[in-house]
Image (cartoon, rainbow, N blue to C red; front, side, top):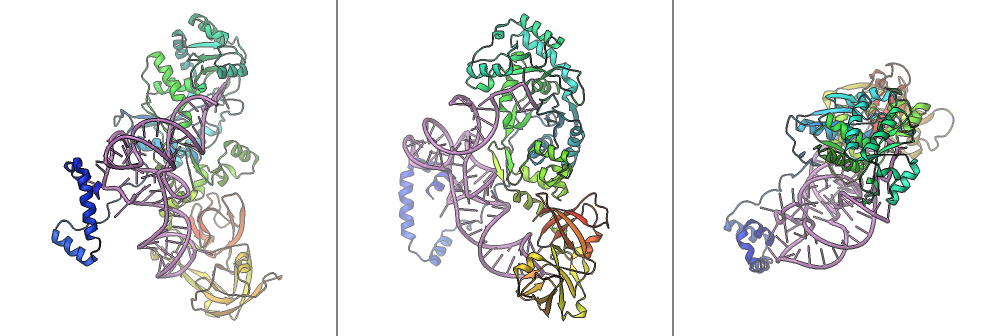
Length: 545
RNA sequence: GCUCCCGUAGUCUAGUCCGGUCAAGGAUUCGGGGCCUUCGACCCCGUAACGCGGGUUCAAAUCCCGCCGGGAGCACCA
């Protein structure tokens, strides 16, 4: 109260103490009054009606202005390494870049960061096309596509310029000694080279005088730099590995930092947006640009985003897709964009989900349920309901009335415009084993149909015998059922990779590939894209509750 | 160990730059109720947060100092 008065009338501020005591006296004097009298007095004083709650202040995450950005002149880039398809963790790369492209009417480049990598992390040919397909699927179409491997020679003149300015030296230490020296802040003997000597060494590197791993070009920073990660990083190394696009055309390959110090300038990139695991590279790029008197683009970062349920491992996915254990790159266990699409999760829902986090630098771990909720908003109203029973057990109902052999059910409980379908019902049904086991000897309702009494034991051989009771909708447990006549075998692929066999109602036979359905009391599922309509079993993939 | 980054409800986020109208807003989850041909959806209600300790100030989520906690980097990978 006091703060509000002071905030709205600055002239009161020097008198804060007086205001405070006046307010507390006033409050004390009216505290005992009955509410009706308070209302009267307020009315007597005039003034505005008590205002309703303030309008919502915000919907989600925030994105700051890009520093110095001119609408129409912004150039951004995404730089995936081609050793896997894009997965949910790449969401920020795609959608944050796309967000800013739209906001500033700029350009977004897809630049494959396909330098030679390492023995453990190598580019593979199939991913160039797969990743472009992923971008398309995600609705983030790049304005142009580049390959770092096409630009390798362009890096060499840059290296010369750095050497001529005394910014680098050729080091012939073995990798482990180099690491030790760096950690200890100790100089290798070659660090004392003059630019002329370095240039000689560099020409020897390019000319093939060294075997792979025998020599590197290192940046000369400061061995006393407090950050050990920043001491004399390697700029170029020699590799004889075969590259999927350029084979063994080059032996001297730039490291990521140098490649981007060159690439970001040559491609005219105006802002670099990337994950915060790359912040040390900002400093490297800037150091190189400063050395050459170049004004490079500013950097912005986002923090780590983890989806709790998604254990994403590129190497494991690669291995299991290769081995055939996974059902290709759209296997739900990969959490690839393809797998989300296969599960019926729309890329627009993913975009909303990703953008709700803003550009925050904090590391976040979020439950997949939040993504599911976003998707549900989009698909619930247009998705038809169907009955599905997992692990079915046949139940014959005695005394079942003839006129209940079929029934008509709405396709959506709240959307009459989605129509209805005729469903074949009793007297014989399939019920889920789990449901039966949960209600031995009880009266239950076959959902939307009739009430029956279940026997005490359900484990005997052959069909179970139940007894018809009545049609009236009572508050007893409701079980999902599928009429025996026309039941459709279904193979339901779950998110963890398990296949559940079950039976669905006849209408499922008419589904088309990529249709999204809701299996009642199970969840949203999507018919597999390569399922041949009419073939059995119907193949569907579980999406989410 | 060194360097950098980040701490607002169970989770994510708005607010922090520029102190006051923030007795802290939204989303999701959870709990209760309603409705319906689902245990889903929808509607209503509710629980729940400024990491801790000092300081500055009439006033601190916001500014300053210290601590604690979490993450990332320290590859001839990207």
